[in-house]
Length: 290
Image (cartoon, rainbow, N blue to C red; front, side, top):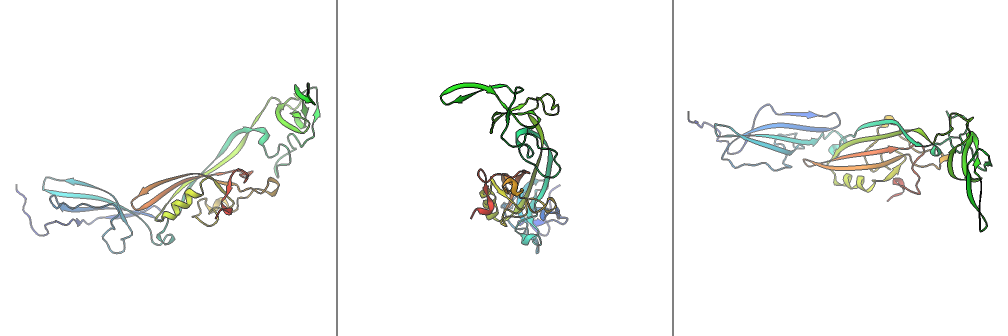
C-alpha cells in the first residue's frame, strides 16, 4: 500500500506529544523527546541546541538517535540535559556525595597516642616521649663513638617500645614480652574516611578551579569559598586538627575527573580526611592560594 501524504510534509521535524523531563533531586534535569520527520528532510540536530519549548530552553541537546520506518518516516529520539534554573541560579547542581569509612593498617608509630597524649578517649601513651633507657631486652645495635664503630643495646620506652638511640631514631618494635598487647606488633588499624561525589556545572571556571585545587587541603567544605560545598554539611563544616597537631587542614582534594555532558561539565572528585591533618610542609593550603 502506497503512502498517502496529507497535511504537514514534515520537512522540519515535529515534536511529538509525550516528552518528559526528569529531575535527579540535586538540580540536574534530563529530557527525553521524540520528533517525527520525513526521511528525506535532511534535517539533523546539533549537540547543544536548546529544547524548543518555552520555559525549557535551558535544556540542551546531548545526543540523538534516528530510526527510519517502512512509511518513509524518520523518528528522532533526542536526549537533553540542563540545570534547573532555580538551583544555584542554574550554574551548578548541588554535589551528590558518598562517604566511605573504615579501618586500614598503619605503622603503630604513626598513632596519635604514640609519643604524646592523642586526645580524649585514649588510655596511657604507647611509647612516651624521649629520652629512652638502654635495656637488655632490646637488640644490640651499632653506633659511632667518634670515629670508632661500636655496639650497644637499643633503648626502650613504655610498653617495650624500642628505639635505636636514647632520643628516638628508628623505631625497632616492641621487645618486652610482659607488654603482651604490644609485643611483636608493628601495625594498628587506623580510621580512614573519604568523600566521593560529583556535580554538574555550566561554568568552565568551576572546572579550572577544581583542577587548580587538586592536591590542596582545606579546613572547610567549600575550599575557601571558591567552589560548591563538595563535602556535605552534615559531616561538619570545620576540618582543622588540634593546635597540638600543628593545626593542619584535615581535608585533601585527592582526585578530580572531568566529563562533557551536553553543554555541561560533570566534575567527579574524591576528598580524603585525616584526623591528624595534612601537613602544609607537604601539601598546599587552598586558603593561602590566590
